[in-house]
Amino acid sequence: MHLFATVRLVFATLVLLSILWNSVWEAAVADELVIAPLVATARRAGLRLLESDHLVLATDRPARQGDGVEDLPRIFDEAFVSWCAHFSIDPATRSGWRAFGCCMAQRELFISIGLLPKEIPAFKNGYCDRNRFWLVDQSSPDYRRHLLLHEGVHAFTSTVRSLNTPPWYTEGIAELLATHRLVDGRFEPTPIPLRKGDVQQLGRIEKIAELRANGGVPLLADVFQTPANEHHDLTAYAASWAATAMLAIHPTYAAMFAAIEAGPLDQEFGVRLQRSRGWSESRAGRDFDAFTDELDYGYDFSRSAIDWSLGKPLASPQRIVVDSSRGWQNSGWSVAKGESCSLAVSGRCTIGVLPASAAAAGTKDALALESEAAGISLRWYRGRPLGRLLVAQWALLPGGEASHRGFVVVATGEDRTLTASADGVLYFKVNDAPGELAENSGTLSVAIAPVPRSTPGD
Picture 1 (cartoon, one colour):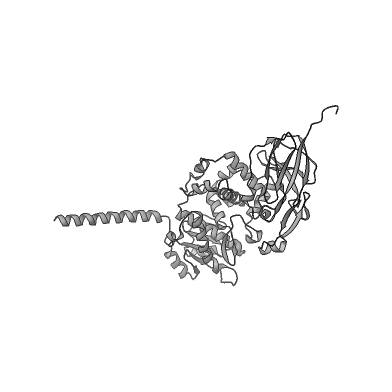
Picture 2 (spheres, helix red, strand yellow):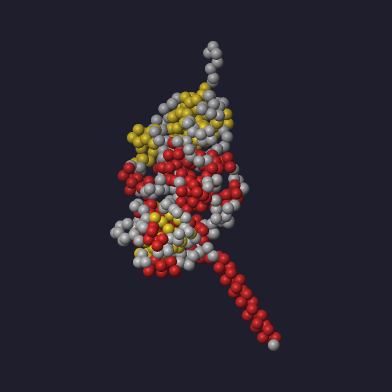
């Protein structure tokens, strides 16, 4: 009798543990939809089904040679590994995860067969519900692929990470992890696109440039408050992507941001970020303004991060060395608005110029050209010769909103004097695209000295 009671107790314990385990497992996968019935529906309707380890893609798009559609599931699997790496997840632990996607040439067909439920909100290009998503077919293979991966990131984060974050991060991380190029047909993540030709019709960098030209780039604080309904607009997508890119890649924020991402991805995500040790709202806002002001293809945070430390008042002649392979560099010297300084520049540096043919082909066959302070008139960047020395201050931008600051150029390599437009540090750099700084070498030497103010009678 004692033995029987013991057996019953053990059996009851095992049953209880089984129930608890099933409850935990069900909770863990509660957000994932079983896709087998969806696959069966698509097959009955005669849709093309393209499958890989982590994606079943149903489409009514006719098979067309060279359109890249048949490669999408394989590329999705390659991207899946990258997404796991971003969140420090071992892909082997998620080997069974799978999404079901619909690439729709005729939206009405998917509605009629029940693969696009009527309760799904109206959408222009794509929409995701847990590990199920839809995208409207696109004329550009590059944008179709980006859109599929964007919705794929939503499917991944909403189920694997139970994401329920503020809109700026929800959309920003989807843009960041979906942005890529193909190298020999394989997925390569490029959170900041290297070349325009890699991301046809994406337009994020162009939108930021347009906003910059009109003085309308959002502040970081505004991006954090972006309402969900504004993400139908390209401006919101571009700004959310830019904010997430800066936080994930900039050397000041990358570790801090990764630590926050390792925690719950819930509505308090932004609050925890801003309460992180070392977070400075003013510095982050200034870094975001500097990033969006200088943003271009291939932007390199490691070479363009700004030292915002306060400079000493320039009271005597000084010599400043300007590295041609870096963006704006803090001189360590500050001048007051209206004060003048003399400049004398010496030295030569080597500027790596990527010919248009090399840039289009995605190679790094740069043509090395020597430059002095005046620059090289063979090629211009943002209205000035490549390689020209620029001197600037961080100040209100002319014609912009009262809160929009950026680097205001107060002198170039051809000038012999400068007059400060604001109180603050002088920054120096050699004019070049931020994605091509790594091709440069050498330095320029700048002798700078305060010019005494003239007095009446002098």
